[in-house]
View 1 (cartoon, rainbow, N blue to C red):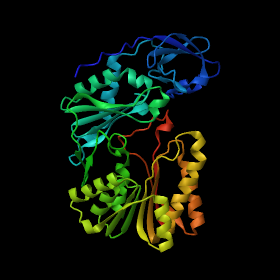
View 2 (view 1 turned 45 degrees about the vertical axis):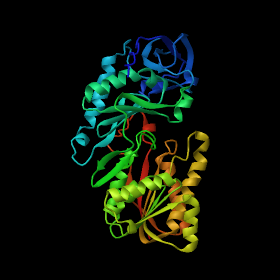
View 3 (view 1 turned 90 degrees about the horizontal axis):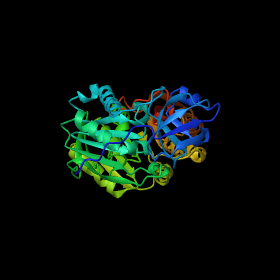
View 4 (view 1 turned 120 degrees about the vertical axis):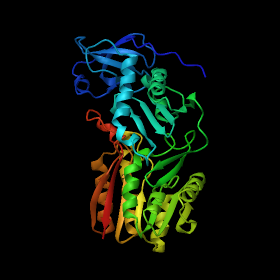
Length: 407
């Protein structure tokens, strides 16, 4: 396929901030909201570089311009320099890869995140590696603008790559005025499934059509925690998708694993995962159902489990949905607490970035209070070291979880 032209990274305009609205930029937060902008000078196209200045026109840095979004600019630099180069883009990708060096050296792991967007100084850009295939998401106008430069940097840094595939089909692109797009960017298109290793577990990744970029790489630490807890326990894996938590539990010694999901196709892949990992069919159950409804039926039928995993999809996409999301987290955790056996464990997560850890903990605590049971936090969970979080960008810490002991 023909190589796309590289972007012109010269400033195409000036974005002037309102008086008193420079604080977040000085704190190195990467987002500038439309309400903080006094004026746009020039006629920069979507994604192009603009120079950011304060009310006295003192330069603050360079940013990617996104006129369709409430996040009207994402900062590339935080200094007064007037240059942002292709070499800098390559250096940032290289530094991100270097941070994952210990993961790359593991003989039992061949899938991890290479670039984690704002937290790796590459706003809106996500890059995941599945063996010799690389999957990219360009989620913002500025990310779209530098797409060709990112692909070139990846091919230079990882010459063994068989193919680079794009999964820019996340709903957030609509807010940037961008259409959804998927397809091969370089090299081979991926096969229907790419087999990956994660410790003792083996999984099949649908790069072209699976959730996110094909797999929930951010839950590696959570799966390891479940494996440690699972021995001789009956496990319920809620919102199971392709059953990854269930496989971790089974290989951790679980007596039985029940996977619940609304997708028949996801449960079929979960069955394939069991066979791939040598898990006997009689140890696994696959239930196509709404989790909230099924847990109520289990409660009423007095069906009980020793270990329950709650890893629901995002409950809040906007600030207006946060209150309802917290009610949802309380409800689902209360239902789980009602069907745990004495001495059981609940591993519960939220991936809603707008719901803080404190909000999530309050929701789970409210569920514990209503359950009438004594609940202790044994461990807190989050995404692993391939999902670093910039201290200047706390929004990057979207995944939070608790291992709870229940009596």
